[in-house]
Image (cartoon, rainbow, N blue to C red; front, side, top):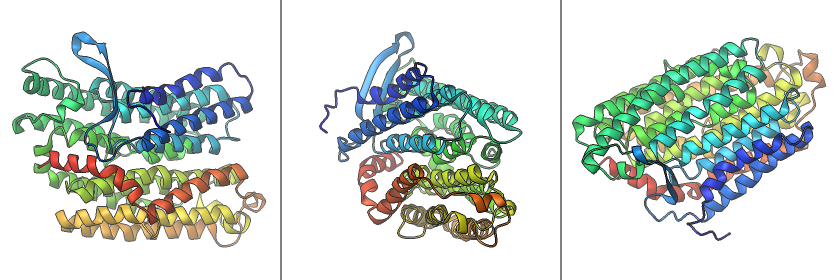
Length: 495
């Protein structure tokens, strides 16, 4: 579909979930609410696919730009745009939310209109994070995402301490938002002085074409690094994630692990806006990445609950992303983006499947399972596929991303790269052990014996994710070609 670049496509993609959320309140029946929500997200996904199809990967800079004055007195604008770095996160987000709706189809029985309205509000705020090119607008979407997540965890969580988990998550994210806000304000003052001779500058597109003196970069870098570390999450600021995976809805755990917004913040803001200081402290980025890698792997290997294991595993996986970024080379940034797209496909699929086990048996603890392959062979087969994809087994997309990240790490931080190889061995140990205890052996729980395998709608949803994981593993150029120009610009910013 040919679209003019002057068409406000990004605004349409951004606002459509909000329109869908408003429409839900005109329909009282749960079936209608689910269908409207899924239809809204599917239409938005088609619009995002059209955006990708009309994106020119050979051009530097941002495309589909929209800019209107918002707070003229402060030089703040409603400004949207995408480049090769942010482009694929938009359809990946919408695909993930489609999966969330399908996985929640029969599990949400109380207040469905409120639940799905909050989901659509969350989708819109996350899309805004990937689209915003004004730093004030970015921070607005960043903080807006906390509201629906709090209520989704507190009201529809599956654990007895869901409200405590919701409070903990919200307080920690507010704490993380404070250094991000100060970092954005510090960048606005410094870049305003350098680019415009004074005043405030919130336009990201101007910031990345301006060079700050190195003595002005330290505050920006460390404030961003601290703030985004909460959301990534990096050790020791990770404590909210295991609690959310155990107490919150499994669909929300899929969103938390499938969309690494903190890592995106490091790529988009922390490193490009303080490039010389980021390179000076490359050892710090590599160090926190390795700690997350090893800590997540060791913690995961000691878990008996599949949800808890996947939560710690995601900490380990994002540590590899941060380690790859610390290399500041093309393989590192391309591998990081590839792996973050993988999170939306692989990690989310694993949580969807584990959620299906919980819905059927009432538990995801290995001590209460066993014999799952007997009663649910198709679900078990998909679990193995996505589990091995998370370990980077060919020909899945996980292999390509991990290969790029490992090669970049070995070139720039050999010791850290060897630690990453050890973490991959840990990954195989905790995943295979968890699957052996949960899926094989005799049936110990009558609920497992009576459980039905994946339903047709679940098969369709999980099959789409499986096809994408295999397709990107066999033809990684489908993603890398879209990313290459913007990734090269990102690396050149650091030269």
